[in-house]
Image (tube, rainbow, N blue to C red; front, top):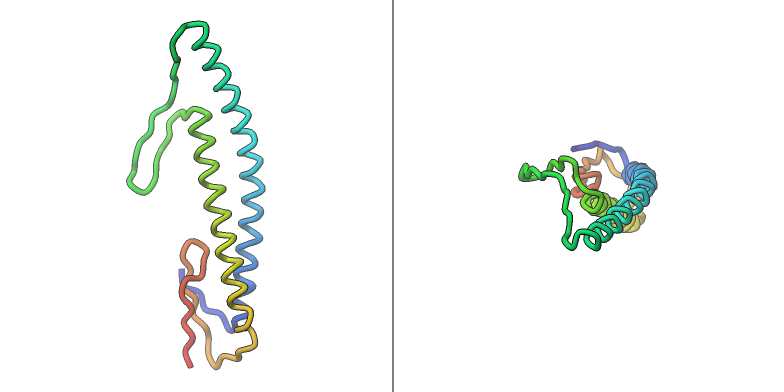
Amino acid sequence: MIKEVSSFKDILKMIDDTIALLKQQLAENLKKLEDARVRAEQVKKLRETFKNLLGEEVLVSGKEIDLKDAKILINPDPLTELKAIEEAIEKINTTILTLQNLRKSLEPWTTVEVPSRITVVVREGIPVTILLKL
């Protein structure tokens, strides 16, 4: 995505807005993670019980379809679901840290007055290139 802004303060506001949204998503996903952990623990205990009773492991898991850049998990077991949620939370945390570091690096630039608009190239919510024309 390409955005045009009039100042570096606008870029910081864009970063702050993205961080706020990501923190909200993080809170929602942490609730989902806790639910998934409870379900995963229940399944673990149930599998152990079956193993003790039957003398062998009982595995019931869904199907995974690989689409190169994504996966479709049909009827995933709670452990697989837990792993997917943990990966999503890790990605959100990494993005928040990246944005916070970028914001800190850009703060000194807020005093710079620019003669024209600033073009910002944003990839996955992170400004990756800032085009400043003099």
